[in-house]
Each structure stands twice: as structure tokens, then as C-alpha cells.
Length: 241
Figure 1: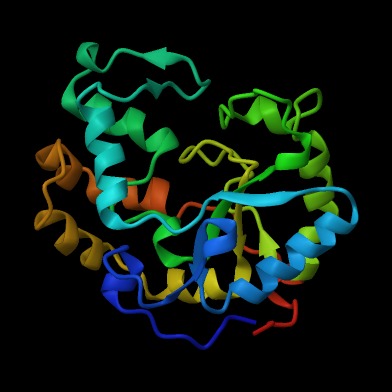
Figure 2 (figure 1 turned 60 degrees about the vertical axis):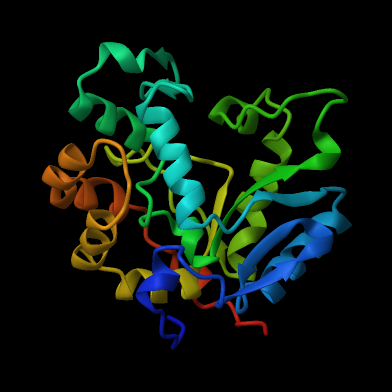
């Protein structure tokens, strides 16, 4: 079932941390209702020899804005839908906006703002000296984190988690490392709106603002709300607090 929770616009767009709990020992921050399910999931994985770590959890608006602006300016790498490098300088501003959205959310529109979503890796399976690339091949057969993928396939729903970016729906590219707490994220998603996002972006220092705002309604449909729905099994998982 969907959690009975109220989110403020600041919480939904990553401009406050008041809805979070800080897990200092694990270097991550999660929504207060997600901490217990996450720790239980992590303990179950550990029992099977997997050191499940959230290498990216809550991400605030300013951090997402820095990622966006860095990519728009060509200071950070951008890729096409197949993960191949693109030259930002060779793209029009509108093309840059589209390319960034394949792999990065608009500031204010990232599910990481909610504290319900995080990216995972199996530290125990990480080869010595290996630099994490965060690409699908690492989580597929032959990749170092394939066992983590198959373990999550079998067990994550029982702890209330699912992957919102599994299917290529023409929006965000599939991300096998990205987990979401089904019921708490469903509550956040139900309260998120195009108008609220527009207000936040209009007041921001986002690069490419004219192009971002001109295409916002279309991109909101394609990239923000166009995700795999949480399965019944994950929504039905008992809430742990």
C-alpha cells in the first residue's frame, strides 16, 4: 500500500534535508521511513556474502544543479543512449538538454531528492583497484556486480524495494543499480507536479533555462513520471520503522 505521508515542495525538489536520517557509518542519507527497510535488506544481502552499499543516496538540488550545468557546459562527460561519448559543443542547446536527460535528472526532478531512491554496489565483489563506472554492463552477466543483480531480482520486493528504471520506456536509460522504496516513493510521486517543478526551475540558475522550460511539459512526461511502476509485491511488503 502507498504510505500516508505528506511531502513539501522543498522536500520533493531536494532543497531541504528535514525528511532524512543520516547514516554516518554508511555514508548515506535516506528518508526516515526507508532507513529500517534498507538496513534489513543490507543485512539479508550480507548473510549471502554481498556487501550491499548505497554509493549514492540523497542528492540535494544544488548537487543535481552542479551535475546538470557541468554537463551542459561540456565540463562533465555526456553520452548517447548507448553510453557512447558525445561532444557537448557540437550539439545545440536543445540537443544538449535531451542528451543529458538520458542519464541525469533535471535539478528538482531527481528521485534521489526524496530520500527514497539510491544506487547500490556490492563492495565485496569489487576487484582491487577497480574504478566503478556505473554502466549497465557492470551489472549484467560477465560484470562484477551481476550476482548482486540476480540477488536483488529474487529478494528486493520482499523488503519493499524495486527498480524504477528497468525497462527502456524511451525516457531515462535502464539503471540496474538504482533502487527505490516502493510505498514511500509512490507517496512522493503522487504529490509531485509539473507546476511545482516549473516554479523551482524558473527561480534557479540552471544552464539552458530557455530550452529546459520550453520543453518541460514534454520532458516531464518522458523522463520524470515515465518510470516502471512499483510491483504489488513491493508495495505489499510490511513497512518497517
